[in-house]
Length: 328
Ligand SMILES: [Zn+2]
Ligand SMILES: [Zn+2]
Image (cartoon, rainbow, N blue to C red; front, side, top):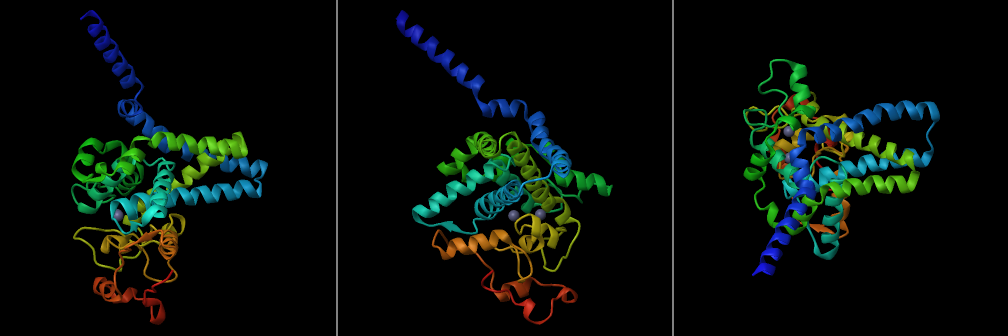
């Protein structure tokens, strides 16, 4: 009897130790402070690093590392979290598809935009209430001042949203997917791994480069919520109240996500561009992977469906450019 009590006591003590070491618990308790560090440290590094490299010069390999990891970070978010997990725009095929799913979600974790399920849930809510009451990051609804709205849509919303409630409402069956659940729970470790990798390649400068790339990934993808609901073309019909836009410059820096009006108009589509001149890096990667047989069942609108969504003839691009091509 006595030994049983001791066993129970040890088990209870061990559970308490595990709880106090839990990263999830630590993150939720210190959420706002950690979110501020994750959002503002890469931005500060981007400013300071630019000055540092302007003074000291930058090697070609360092510049390549900065650009490649910036764009890889964008692709993790745009393909992994957005076009795949949120909108189910394609399906992984066989073992290569499963490996790709693992890699793209790991890449998304290195982008420090929050664990997968919270990212997907908040984005699903944005589509459900775009620019009307309930939208977690509209620059329009609820703001009488342009700059307050811009700030809220760009970063402010991350500190105001009630994540547990949004996750509960919009996660759907994501927490039944064991790989997604694993990636969601191990989010922080992949982020750490990114910096270890950068350090091994370039030493302390690698940490600075990695932080700068993270800053570029953040500012590019955050601009989709702010700039792409304020500046650009509104060529296609969308839900009532939605003020999303297509913005060429955001498309260029955020792996195609600046085709945001196209996306709101045809949210199922895995492609966020309709013209050959609209840069959509995520689509080029998805198209290539589908040709290699890694992914399948791509959701794409037909030419007729695109035409049916077009509502402003003044913004038509004449002749050949108006026909969406089947290839990038
Ligand atoms: Zn979306
Ligand atoms: Zn939007």
